Length: 285
Image (cartoon, rainbow, N blue to C red):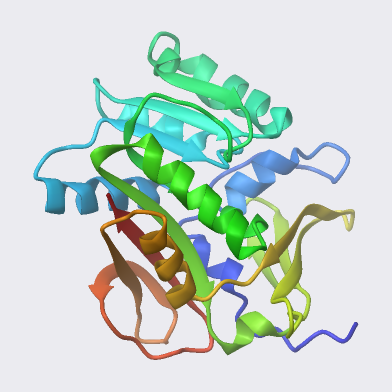
């Protein structure tokens, strides 16, 4: 496989702020700690959820279902920021759920009990109706067939309160369809690398990997691997409406003076198809 020359990979844009982790070598490093220290910043997602829901529904949302929850970090943040909030964290893999419980929930004591972790398939899980359901970090792209995506969106719609909100993030642009490998040094002593293989032009299937390298030269290759379909924004919006949602809004990320994403998302009805872009889709029941 021939890799493109460090084109701006979409995954690099998700990280907003640097975190501090304590790592030495590949043998001693924890891949979930590495991930949370280089990729995912749930604070931005949390603030977007609260602000967007409040703007339309005129109240502070209290109940959240975090699909594809992984380490449940968003759910943990959700319950810490308001005394009456509750969350359900759903993931099929027990390993990140257990890791998240030990790192994020158990240390909170009684407060942590307001998060219910469920090791279940998001297509089948049953929870109390909630005000918000999320599927972040492009995780729902694991559903590569339209019928399966429609089934998932219908399940989410049924799980929401009558005025509920479903939020997903997505990326796009020409560079998403091409192979790339991009690295970024983290201040805590390791290098994060996103590797993206070329998208299949017929199926839109793509394989992506996260690697980590340490100051002593050791590496953790393919710490995480993702097998996805690259979905287009209009087709996802159409499936959401078909699933029963009454309206779908697009929130587009702005750019700083250098052309990089600035982390500020504003409602938009049209946008330039930049080389890479990040957006939220917000579906209203």
